[in-house]
Image 1 (cartoon, rainbow, N blue to C red):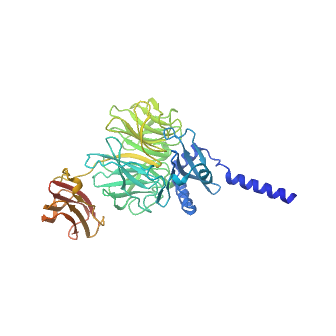
Image 2: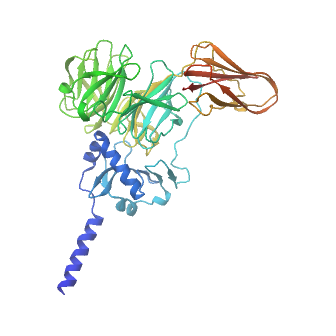
Image 3: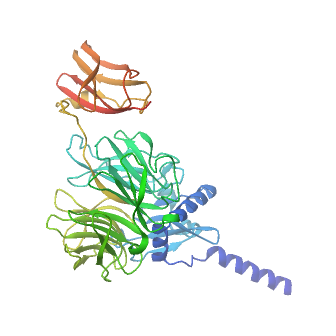
Length: 500
């Protein structure tokens, strides 16, 4: 009888441990994951080992993300309200999720990048064709380790792989920013501890900063990046030997110095450059936003109130007011005047990482549940553009077209095609493919970054069909080049990079 009682009690304890919920609370789980990049790496490694998804979007509308580890098990954050992510949210182990939700009709994203969409496409975000615009928006994606391209007019999704996943390079991309010369894109990554450079076709060029290789005494758990007026790069750094600092790099990515020391910073997340000063958000401590002059000297605590917590990205409005993306409660979109005085908190959405004013006048925000267009009164959701993805900062991308090259496509754009060259970058040869639908004169030329013609590849009449041409850049120096196709009123230009 005693043996039976002992076995019963042991099984009861074991069953209780297997079915118990995590002890960590939802809010603490989110904040830990947001601040600690190494935790995210550990979670993804365990998810790969266990063959468990890192992101789940259910047909019922729940957004579930792997964000922590407890007792050797992955802890998931379960969000059931995409606007107020803290409403009715909870933490759960995978066994609880499989018991609660029907994953056979859900969209599952795994740490190795593969996606299982068992919803029949019902959970996919619609993609629109808005090519040829003057400006776009880039948003980084932690879940799929890539960068999306959006419409600056209304936030429509244009390209879900503007910068595709790059294994061992992008592990948790925080912010994408166009290089000051317009010809490439820099992406800061919290896990892999570097600022990486890509060409505008999404091809990886190399580590930009620190030049010479990843160095955790310089950068460790980095967040937002910005340019100074002299084009030196500033990077928010949270951990390692240079914990809670702003690090400075020259235009080649060489480390210069610690631009702002840790004295007045506490887990910095973003930098907003103004004409006479700069503002830096802090995720921890009483001082939420710190103000420095343009040389990095401390001026004042810009905002230290309690009306919002965990500020991330900032945006300046035309009237000088500041929009603050507040991640943890009190959470939402805060509005400050130009002197740091609190005006109001719009909490129609919570868990906000980034906020941007669209050309149509509404706000575009990323929060813990996805990407949303919201109104400017209370930040109530007008529409959800994408959900189930861990999106980060929003920045502007302006396509660079050199002097003498214009993208003006005719009404027959769908009948003609100019493909992206491959390989890209290349050394010294690459293939250019194009298609034409009618017999006619075809011109395919290559230009350097200044708009100077460097090669004529095709300059003759051709029948309808698809063609491939090899370009040899052995006589040219490394750099960005452009190839331009003209035929029957169709004109299109694409970029490629020669890297010797």
